[in-house]
Image 1 (tube, rainbow, N blue to C red):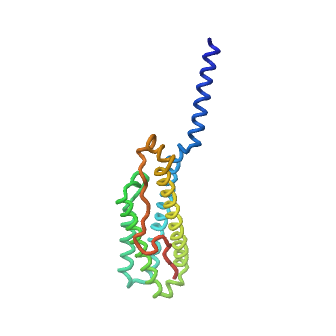
Image 2 (image 1 turned 60 degrees about the vertical axis):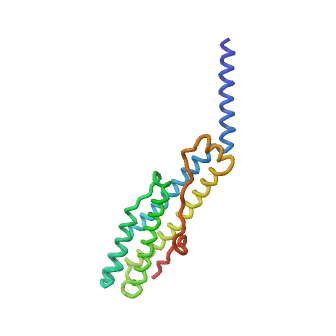
Image 3 (image 1 turned 120 degrees about the vertical axis):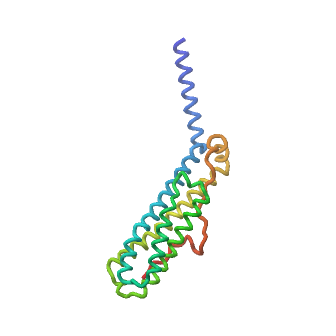
Length: 202
């Protein structure tokens, strides 16, 4: 009697193990995995935008020392930075298309203000020769490239996730187990060549 009960328990365990193996092989875990990859990719986008924001105060101070008459341009950069850093989109608000669009527009305004600042710097040869300015230029250029890569990776992660929940078998698992997870929003180009890193050469 005890042996029969033990065999039944073993049989149930084996059945559950087999079922779990079959289900994992059918992509049941793809949706939460891809969802986490979207969040991780977004985290990298935020990191790179924050890195850029952190460079701006030093850049503005350096330019100010040589280009005191460019107050309007400097003010525009400072204000654009303040607006860009005030709009936060984290994993909890990533599904909000309006918030994502506001974030994107603020970052693009900051990119435009920085581009104008770089044009202004051309008028000041002493500024262009300043070692601190050259170092900031190099860091900013590298950061703009990292932003472009991070945005591209985010777009690809969203595409993979959205495709998974809209196609078979992911669509089946989505309706059965993950219906609370909705399609994700992604960046939409609102300016010409928005996915291309801006030129920051001096």
